[in-house]
Image 1 (cartoon, rainbow, N blue to C red):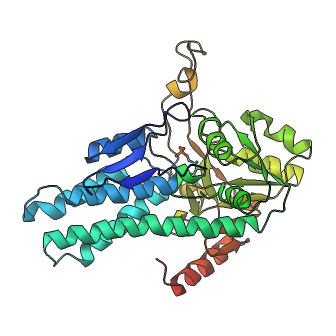
Image 2: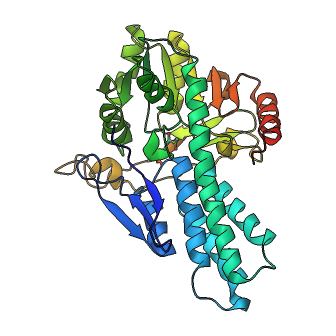
Image 3: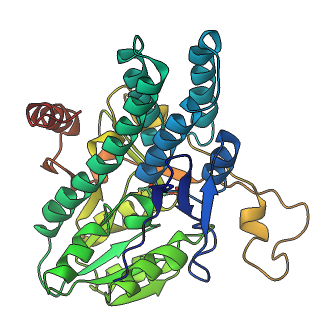
Length: 355
Ligand code: MRU
């Protein structure tokens, strides 16, 4: 498979280069980002998307802001402005806030150094966030694969592959790793209305890797489960609350209900950077609401709904923790009760030297 680098620093270190995911699979376009406004727009419009990928892009964006020509009195205020501005691009995926908080902390820890050194520390911190995500995905993929056997079929929703993260992905990681190891796992990919991340991105990534992939409309998931054709549901996550309630792309919650009904294990795969211990439960997770046009006209040659119809377009929903069989992280497979498992997982990570 051709390895695509969805996010990278430009060669001169003065820009960020991302794949414009809105153009895939038709066109592989790269965008060079040099300022916070362009990055904000890229995140808001889902040119770069997926919880971990948004965090990584924001971390590089913060570093680029620190390179701007600012006098000493302005520097800290303008960096706070940059953080607030980038954080306001999308509300649900916690990785965005997590990565920006880490960058702010790196700034504070190095505050007494000359500006050039501060900027270099921020560059290194953004690269660390990126590299840690690659390592986390690899571990998540191994742990996820331990739950599958050769010949299984996984159903997935939205896109939680390399494009949404850094490499391997979370939910697609076990499948891609299986392929590398010569195993065959097949996938049903939900198309994922309204933005079609499943049809456009998941199908693209899996087919590039030679994975046996079948695209279905979102409302077909129950049927393939009922036919006994799904061994496991594997999806990513945008923010897991302390009690294990977990937000992901709209449609995830109804998939979990279906999986429970048909006795299919329901796994959510995520790095610990997606677990937000400060959010007590799913009710406290802010769900992004998006433009009605995404539902009524974006993908159609003509508008498909009557002018003036009311549209509700929440981009995410929350899977209730009791519907989740296990949460797969970089330190292992976590079982309910999740608050306890998360606490242990963070301890293990700390003992391994992680942050
Ligand atoms: O709106 P998107 O495309 O950013 O939503 C992405 C998802 O819901 C993913 O499943 C989630 O971010 C996990 S990505 C590893």
